[in-house]
Amino acid sequence: MTDVVWLSNVYRNSSAERGYRPVGYPDVVNPPLDNEIGIAFRSVMARQKKHLTIEDHEFPKQLYAVKRWADHKRPIRHIMSAGGALVVSSTSAKVLRDHDMGASRLVPVDLLHPDQKTKLDDDWFYLVLGSGKPCFKADISEGVIPLGNPAQLFMIQNSDHVSHEDLVFSEEVLTGPDIWFDPAILGAPILSDRLAKALKAAKAAKHWDLLKCRVI
Image 1: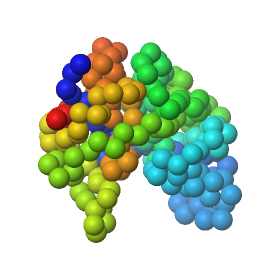
Image 2: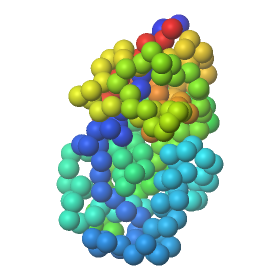
Image 3: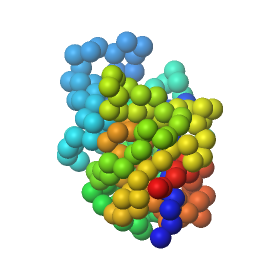
């Protein structure tokens, strides 16, 4: 058993942010706050951050690229934040399915061009994290931003301010599924070493912005 796990810092990478909205939510600079589709999507995103229960049917079946940002023209990533939702490519999805996902799951989504009809190449899936392991050792970790006073939630710094082995987890993290979240860390999938190696073999790991974490 390896004494290493990996944290995906994709949410802290600005190049992974893509401007997508659910079909039915207007492509205007200031969309109306009372739009029902927008309200529902914001609710799903808020609950996802808190790892609350979300049914598959609550996720929008289609997301379109906002025209003025033209993110549909940018190079394809194997994992990205599409309008705040964590979305993975078919390559990443295949690797995930070949491992123990525990209570986490993949939900299909169509990514569309700004015309809201033309599909982006590849098959895409929301990555919904459902398994939690409360093993983060914040007191001996570096490269984190405490949120609240007293801090019970932490945000990982961006890549300029956090390095491999800055983050520390207790040894209990080595048991259970291959992908999970820690309730003390905001917006960061955590992976087993075997899953990280499989993503590397599939040439998808670079886009996951993986940080090597110590286990004690």
